[in-house]
Length: 129
Image (cartoon, rainbow, N blue to C red; front, side, top):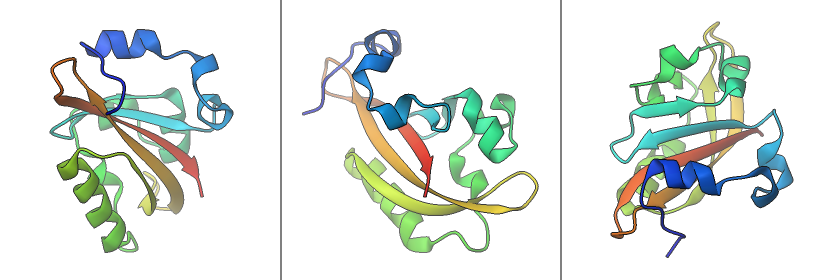
């Protein structure tokens, strides 16, 4: 089982750049945090730079608002399966920026477990494909 945290604050406090692989601590990585029910509660500053959407555009929504005509149905199904099964995994997906241009990225999805063994959040680290 993944390392468990009692609250979101303890998860954040446990994260430091030294503990993250180099590619995750770079400014080019987009980091999103969502509740287990998938509404976004945090996006990193790189989110706006990569998507054109502000934090206020994303918070409270599912990241599915980034999907469009060429978003791969199998990638969406993979995300849904990882969330339902409370598992970590990588997904390559095509999404769309605010201006309508598409972009492809690799998303690493990780569940965050409480000390009671319950998934409370998911963190997604997205890098250009």
